[in-house]
Image 1 (cartoon, one colour):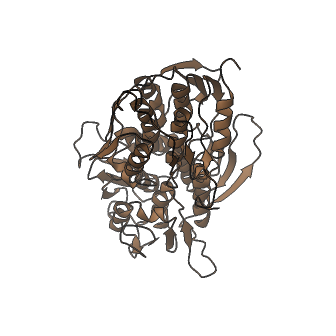
Image 2 (cartoon, one colour):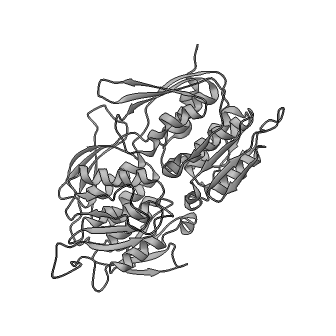
Length: 475
């Protein structure tokens, strides 16, 4: 059923302070990296807590098309609610599985991880692969990654607008499987990439670079947003036995090079952390409604961008408590009173958290507080143009928001002026849908046109949200 045909979802308003502790599904970002690494590993891998969502199912289908095999196993640990997968890696070169018409096709949906992480693997396959996706995916930037693959010797052919899906990717005549320098087979391939539009371009090259003879040295030519996601990729590869050299933190733009050394990622067992970015709307609920909301199994050490909630939420009017569990993880609890603060924050490293921050900032504007969100110009190239979408939807409910060159400004509303209910658009973007859910806590009567799009990364969000709100203080 399309969003147009579906009935709008009435976002529930807060009816009192909360007192809830929740368990969240596995991290989408970590699951995507784990699936790719397992598909090219030196031996079988067992993944525990792997997220089961639209994005990760598309990733599994894409890697299956390249020869990997996935088997779901029963979870006898009682420790996680998501999938337990046994992954048999694909042989090399990756054996492409063509359709009945003789053409191999991969559906990216609206998953940035599929449309960025898998094409470098197709360059190492035994035949070309055609990549396409949802209509909105055809507007997401892809050219810098494909330019880098072309420079490495891959075949890239655009089947629509240059720089966007649909595109055909395969091994070129010279082939990136060959050493960069036949006289020095241990020398890494070298390539530059403009990663200013998405850190996924850099992560994609690092994930595939270990499969090249000599490895791969990647130099971004511009600023790289969301650097915690690159750090996540580097740490993940190192944990699977792949050596990665990082540039000095103070190196100037254009002189920073990440070098991934050759080798197959190690197989074995891997447990996926809960998704800390998806924790945001639930923790934010405590600030809006008042009371307490805890998230269990918060990792004591993590590269996830969502760990930033520990210091963002206090700036927005809440407090954060941490309690150590027996397994060494934490339960992170947000505590709020319903009184919100405005915020002036550089979110360049944690841009995916912006919609939830913006929801709290919009509600804070009705309490007389202005906010400025900076360093997030790259959000114009996400599932939708998130800066335009957030501006439109905040203004739709009576707020005053405007775009800047690299972010958003949200003005304080005059005394006596209130936000009002409206039907908000999700733009087929899971984070815009949860933005609307958070706003709805403080503005009764909010509706969302497409709550089902939350299945991209957070299956059964409406049920999780309803359970959250059913747990209230003094019940």
